[in-house]
Structure formats: structure tokens, C-alpha cells
Image (cartoon, rainbow over all chains, first blue to last red; front, top):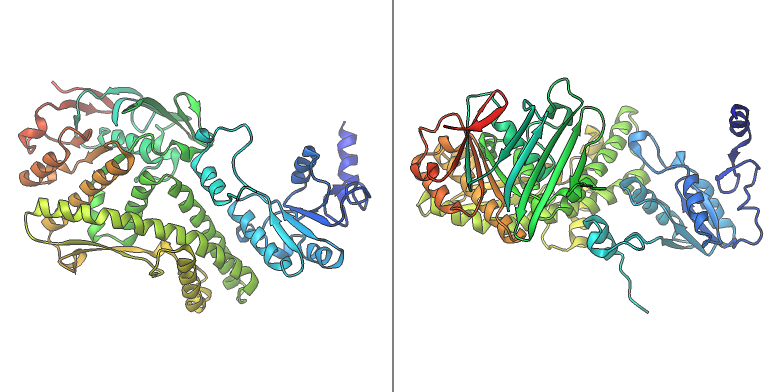
Length: 156
Length: 373
């Protein structure tokens, strides 16, 4: 068991393309040819990739930032893998970048920063925030409800 | 709403104390440092999740004990609610409503509304602007609980932005324009929410305060509440206000870089209190100041009642005895039996007879409460 942990520590690095945790230089998602290479989902952390993968609903690729912008913790854009993201977005034939970063103050700031940078050459979307499925409207807290109202959309 | 029952365990100097409130007015008599204000503080904590006296939970817990609990039963028009807060020496507090833990603490706001009036409030007129901001913020939270979240977000943005400015100052480098622009935008977004809500509430409070001020002073004096935001704006439109913020930030750029801190935003707002158009801070007499604060408190009571739909509690901490009989009378007529009132005092001698009639009287001594015989 202890050996397994030590091994894991040695073997696991970051994917050169998307910065997700990976034992290989390029992770299994990036090397999967069946996945849509035109859509990128940007997340803060590798754990977010795992959460999104569990849904099995997303068939595009990822980009892991490795954190969010937070001057208090000394984290600026340069400490995150934002430059590589720009390079990916401008080089490959990416058609959409989906920003899936938690709606905290730092998360929103990071979202704002990235969207300003990549908007000129690619379509940028942000995942919706609001009510959990199976949740009753009357039991939702006011902050979530206000947020859900803000992000309402027209029925087609 | 009516507070029926309060249970304090290891809160401040109380071991295990149950208080049943049996009349619309409860008078708590005791010498200094026996626990009178602690009792009101417990009610304040349930209503606002804060204490105006301390900011750390640890200070609310009896010395040498790991946790404290404040539990209450509140009767509303539609039924009763149980609310309890567990405070911990180390670690986060837990809040439960009807015995179910709340995932978000802010959800507890609104279960109990209260207006507190203590000697600290006399500072509202003479004190520094932060007294008035804190007073206004706690009122807005009671009317619009979401505001607690908005304020929290603003403070968070402010701290991040200050960290960035401070860091640049320390390294004597200029702030990277792209990085600061990001926080400028966030400051404008969150700051405009704060200032707009503050303005809206003040606008509704002003006529009520004016009305009560006239009633109490019995003179044709006009009280004006004038909101003096750090970032002035005209039209109540999110985009307009945000634009005003960005312009102001731009103007103050140099000052901010020099001082390494944010000088633009609602954390530097003030509220001007004017009597006949002259600042009460400079010209009002002691008596006028008291009248003014009393008028503000009565306005708060009535505004909360009209927004929430139920009369809030009134907590009078050691101030009733300081008002002359005429003002006591005005207060009495204004609250009647509609607003449940908890009053602390060191002695009953200076009370107007109307207050003593039909009130429940308790004595507190060394953290124990018993009926006054």
C-alpha cells in the first residue's frame, strides 16, 4: 500500500496538453481520438475533470488551470496555465470554449479574465448556475434563486 | 413576531438559563456586569448572526468551555419556529432551524427580526462614518437577507484588490494593468449592488424617520437622511452605476497606487443626518441627538414591519432610563403592545408608569435570571 502511494507520487504528472493528472505525457482524454477536438472545457482543478467525466455527457476535451486567480494567495494569471490555453485556443481549430469554474469571487474573476482573452477568436460560453435537479423551488436558498433568475433563458 | 422562549447554554456568563417571555414588555433589572446585555446580545445574534460587541465566536463562549448554545422559539403569524446556534471555541458554528442544520448560515436570517437600541447607537450622530455604515447594513440585511451575501462578496473583492495593490506597493512596481482591470470590474459589479441597495433602503427609511422625528420633538424641525456614497451616481441603473465606479477608480488610480489600498467604493460611504439642513453632528444638542436616534430606531421598527409583514422585536439596552419622561412616553405610544420589547436597566425608579404596568420583570444577578419580586 505504502509502495503504491510512493509509486503514484512518482508516476503521476500533468498532461502536457491539458494539465490534467496523468501517468503518461499526454493524458487518456487528450489521446482519445473519438473525442471532439473542437470543444474545450476549462476547469480550475483536476477534480473538476473527474466530476464532469462522471456525467459521461461531455465528449469534448479539457483544459485544467490549476487554480483560480487570487492575489491574497499570491496567485496571478501567470501562476495558472492560462498562456498554454491561449496557445491552444489560437492554434487548433477550436470552435467553442466552455468555462466551468465555480462561481466564487475568485472563480468569477478568473472566468472574466479568460473570456476577455479568448473572446476575439473563439466562441466562449459559461456553464449555467442555479437550482439542483430534484430540488424544490421553495427550499432553494435566496442566493441560488437570485442567481438562477439572473441566468434565465427564453424557451424555444 | 414574538420571542417565546430563550435557552442559553455556556453563552457568556450564563451556565444553563431558560427565559420564558410572558408579556409584550420584559424589563430586566440588574447591576452592572451581571449579564443584562449578554441576554440582549444572544437575541441580537439570532436576529443578525452577529454581535455588535465582538467579532469572534470564541468571545461569546463561557471561559474554558468548548462550545455554547443559544436556542429560541419564535412565534410567527403562520406558526412557530425553533432556531438554535451552536458556537465553538474552535471551528465553525452550526445553525439549525426546526432542528434541521442549515447548509448556508445566511438562510437563518429573517427567522427573527430585531431592532436594537443601546448607548452605542448614540454614536450614530457623532461617531465615525463606519458606525453609520454598520447600522445601515444591518438594517438592509434584515429587510433583504440576500444583502448579507452581496456584502460578503464585496468585502472579498476588496480584500483581493487590496492584496494586489499592497503587493505592488511593496515591490515598488506599478500594478499590472490587466490584473488590476479585472478587480476594478469586480469592484464595480459588487460595489454597485451594495450602494444601490443602501440607497434604496435609505430612501424608504427617510420619510418614516422624518415623521417620528417631528412627533417626538414636537417642533417643526425637519430631519433629512442624506446618503453620501463614495462613488456618486445619478440613475439607478446597474450599468450607469458601474460606469460611475470605473470613472472614479480611474480618477483615483494614482492615489490608490501610492497608498497601496482601495480608496474607491461603498466601504467609504457615509450617511449625513441633517436637522433643518445643518449637520446634526456639529450642531445638535445632546437632547436633539437623542431625539434623532430615537426617531431612526422607530423608523427602523416600522420599516421592518411593513416589509417583513410582522412587527420586529425592540431591544432597549440601558437607554430607556436615559430618556426623559416625555420621550419615554412617545416611545411607549409608538410601540404600544404591537412590538415585543426587551428592556435592560440598572434601576426602575426613572421609568414612566406606563412602562411598568403589565410588564414582566426579571432580575439578573451573576448570570442567573429569576422573577423580580
